Image (cartoon, rainbow over all chains, first blue to last red; front, side, top):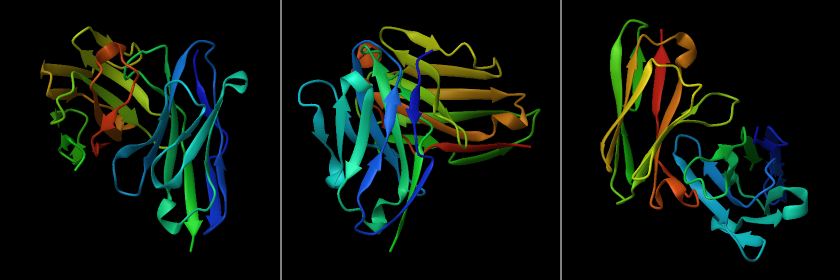
Amino acid sequence: AQSVSQHNHHVILSEAASLELGCNYSYGGTVNLFWYVQYPGQHLQLLLKYFSGDPLVKGIKGFEAEFIKSKFSFNLRKPSVQWSDTAEYFCAVNPYNQGGKLIFGQGTELSVKP
Amino acid sequence: ETGVTQTPRHLVMGMTNKKSLKCEQHLGHNAMYWYKQSAKKPLELMFVYSLEERVENNSVPSRFSPECPNSSHLFLHLHTLQPEDSALYLCASSQEGGRGRGELFFGEGSRLTVL
């Protein structure tokens, strides 16, 4: 079965630290890739997306992600986190243009200490 | 303001009750979805409605019944639920329909507690 794996369940960082959250998926075909973020008490919102082209994509709030096809990975990065980045982060995969039938990872909770 | 509005935001119901969750999208999208978000688990797709298809996750119990009267409204009818159905139910929409690239816009969710 297709799946998405997020390696870190809970990450705790101090402000200004660098962030990398891992995401791997199990699907051999064409995929569209997403990172969603859920701030405390708020709705899930799109952080960034990859459809095709440059494998390094930039999203909102200084986040970026790199698609490495050979590793089936789409890791999320930010060079310097802020307290306001405290949230839960979800990686999601859309195999072969399957519309909104996304496969989500179980999420990574990020806590940033001021 | 997300463009996708869910009501109620919180619902407590007994196992013998019948209730409904409502979702309305104001984005002009043509596909709508129900996802279930349980603690420490990946979001689980329950139902998809689009111009092309209605898709059901075969693992969703029949005590959950979706209704999509038009492209802007989506309901989830609940009856004889179990305590393990307690979760956050998320509605989402997309503008590319059931065969698009999957960019979803989510509502804030309906927190369901089954006693």
